[in-house]
Length: 300
Image (cartoon, rainbow, N blue to C red; front, top):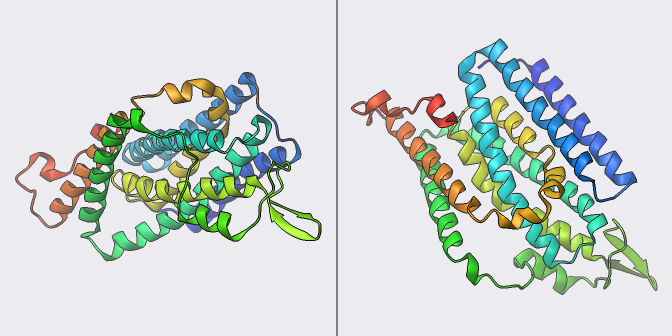
């Protein structure tokens, strides 16, 4: 798929502009969106993704359109799982409801940055090392097994706050205020600079985004090796995610089979990647389709 530089520039500018408008709106008026507002924004973002996919079909053909739609739906599914972890973090750290939208927006922007970095690294690795598909496939199969095991032991989860090495370092190194100060990350009190709980929330969301980027990028590269489609599918999957958080509301924690569904999807893509690697080394020529699973099967 040949994508000219001007197409990349236009795409990035348009998508960044959409996100920038969202940032400016949230920055001015942190609030809890109504069901109508959340549904409207989600409808707009989903429509934009569908229109973009049909645009790819018209310009580049059905194959690449299928790759985009398969990648977008898969990344959207993984983003909902990411959203579930966001819910846990915001609940455990007692973020006020009116401030959750700001925290979610920052978390989504961080997710976009991390995914952009891993998209570039993944493209470079694929171009240089053909065996990387074996590693990607094995990693996704391991992730699928881990998700299923997490589902099996979900009743054993503790009610403690989220914790990792970065959060422990921040809590140990810096003094923090006891309550939230709006969207401020730091404040000055009695001549001393203090961090607010909101900064701890952002760090928790960012570290979670980093881990999810490790899962999502190999997954989409199992569906398409076109960096342009990988990038756009990821951006569209993140658009409207914070509105989806409020639209689902209390139902988010009832998606008890989400991990099972994702484990099946990631396991399938992992197998697809390994078959693709075998095909590259002419070790799967005896299999149907020479070991290459058609994109319509992946999309289904």
